[in-house]
Length: 529
Figure 1 (cartoon, rainbow, N blue to C red):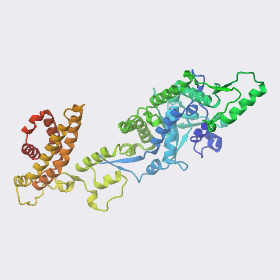
Figure 2: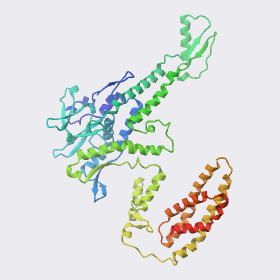
Figure 3: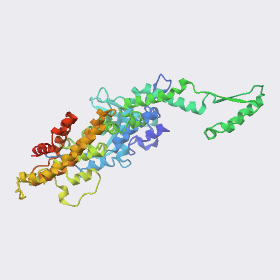
Figure 4: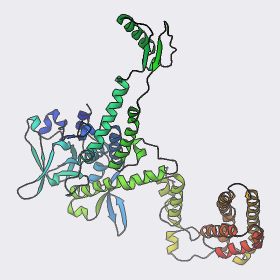
């Protein structure tokens, strides 16, 4: 059943001669390997191993669901989506009349992973333009060279009493996995056959163990002799009342001297649980996929799960995305189009990471004039702001637009005071903020001295104090910089906060008063200027 379902994902395009027979959808069984575990493994049978199936499905579907866009270079560094090109909608949404891009890409990628190559026929018009792409079951495909030494693909259909079809290389989309020749890729299911065989053997053993275990759970004994009929009646009565999960934990009533003795599971049989864990880890290594992606969470934590997801994109998915991009450029674009156009997989949704880091990155890009407010809203799938200013790029020259910055320095409005006078007016606010930080430090350190693990507690306290310094002094510093016509002092305040905490930690408790609040304000003001 599973094999037929997998085979139905591929085949020839319906219009081809061979495909007039619906049975052509059912690809051949392919190669088999006999393993040391005593079972035969093929690419299709390997999919019955849960860990292998989960890994293959994750990679295939993640590649399939990512937008695959045709891009055009604009100028020296720019690029845009070539939405008007005939291939844009075809590769983004529907490569043929019967399949979505998700179904097509995940199917071809799955064959590339499990069989070593994913194959699709490129149907072309009379003028040579791409009309559709149809996946072909890999078990029917053989790669060879013709008399002229050119690569061709022979599609076998002897089992359907049909003639074989030979397709030129230009009409075949060929997504091969890593391999020695660059043409034929290694099949993971073939090289991992021993691991898959062990996993399937333990999986089958576990099923048989719990369904039809030869070890009895309970032995009923009697001091006297029972006739065969009496023993059968006792056994039937016991099974009726206590066998099966629905009768678990029911109270047993024994009579006439009958006693019940429970059997335990032998340690060797209980070890099959560890064997199944090992199989999951092994499949993760073969597929180069984080273990949590196939449901194994023993080594995953909240602190490392985000980084593992990013590594999954860069280490696992990126290589397959690159194969798609390069093969599509080579086979689907004309030589002239290849000079200015290319395909790109959009991984933005998978590379978002945690919200805090993503917001910090967007803020930096916005302050550098890289993106606009509407660009950020587009990244977060939010509605656009209906205001031209929301599409402008801004930089930190008192937050002006790139256009105005190119026009040169603008005359600044008179604030009525020189920068030194503005500093003098804000001096009390700076002083109050620093005094609050120092008072908090004095109380916090005093409360932790002498306590168990005081060194670690004081270290953690100073990390919090650094954040308090930035929170308390940054608004005042920004107000001063705005009035004085200076750049945003955020970086300077952060650097000063780090220096302040480092200097304070180095001072002994009795020496902390040597550095006054006035001196700290003076140091901060100097950094801002």
